[in-house]
Image 1: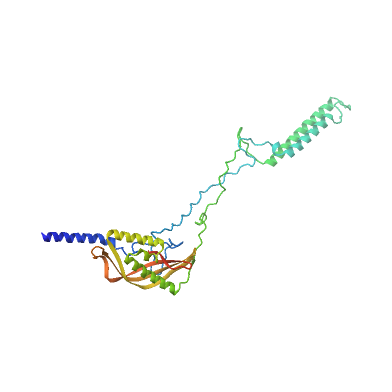
Image 2: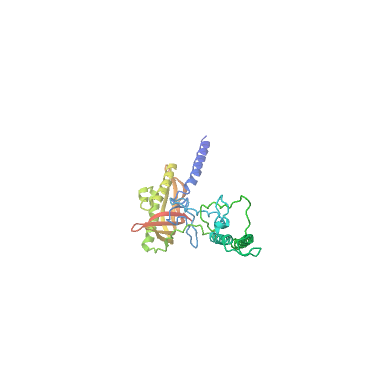
Length: 337
């Protein structure tokens, strides 16, 4: 009976251990994902000759807006006659050329007056006077002058208007409705419709020895405060955003009844990857390679449920620090590599 009960107890302990192992495997702060903010370079992945950081997966900084789509091509309407108006017939020649019409009318009127009331010539009978021969001659001259005037009118009209296809009876010229927007050329090269680029922050702010020492102190201070479960002490080393993430992880561990411990933290090597200044703040991303003992215990029994409390492991991550002008450095982002 005891053997059967003991087997069940061992199986239960193993089951609990296996259940807690995956939950505690990522207990070290910042180990599970890449999170935080890097100013305008939050979604720009830093890279070194040896490693490339993972993209930020969680941040309060909104991602950059997508470029607007290029406007659809809108061709110009066909050429329209300048006099064309909806619902109106084509103007006559006299309306389009009043000067020539007036000149020809005056010429014809003068000829008619001269034919009817001018001097008399010799009639058919040879007598000088105003007989039937004079009247007939005046009428004949009038017909000739009208014929010449009509011929001149046709020639002038053809010379001015040129060859034109006469519209069908009742057909009118109509204009296309005006466009809502002016014509725009088709974009090409991928930049015609792009918004103007945002100002690029200055890269290459020189870091001093005291800055590098501050980064190491932040590393050791965060791990010590984390192991003690002291959020007040963590506040001195983290931005409000990173403090909220660490607080969530700590709350999850407490709800599971486990506690993560990180001890004997030692910075092996630190290399500045990039540094810049924007909006009154200085940012610096550094590749940190550090060693520490990392393990998780059950708060009720003190038993190690994951990690190694005897041997240190080496970690390599990208840490981004931020400092307001005249302020102290704070951790603002961690990226896995």
